[in-house]
Amino acid sequence: MAVLEGRGRFWWADDPIPEGKFAPDSFVAGLLEINGDGSSSLELDGYLPHPQGPMASMMPGHIPAQKRIAGILKGSGHHVLLVGLTHGGRRPTSSYAYERYIAFRLRNVLDLSIAKNTAD
Image: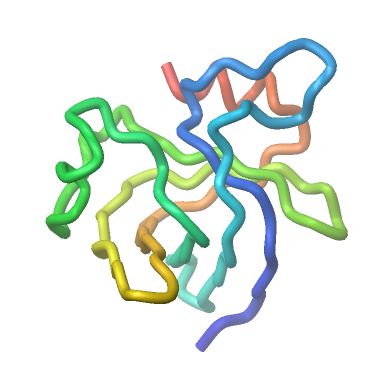
């Protein structure tokens, strides 16, 4: 059961953020759900860029431990860092496509520079 749901903008934590912006150009809007056990799921309204090309993330599975997703929540402005990721798959349809991630840990990061340092 979700204890918190929030929309926001999300990106790979190692993507550079241009000066004067709060998110990199590669961000994707999505819905973050946080469960009572601390796990979370993120459903994006599009696809995060994948280093092996767009077809690589079609297959669900584990993501390398060093990969993290950073984000900023609409409304509260809180920064989050999703770690321990599993790819939940993509859903291409004729009218709408989305991507889902599951995180086993979530950190609330008030300062985005902490998110960058933690991603190393």
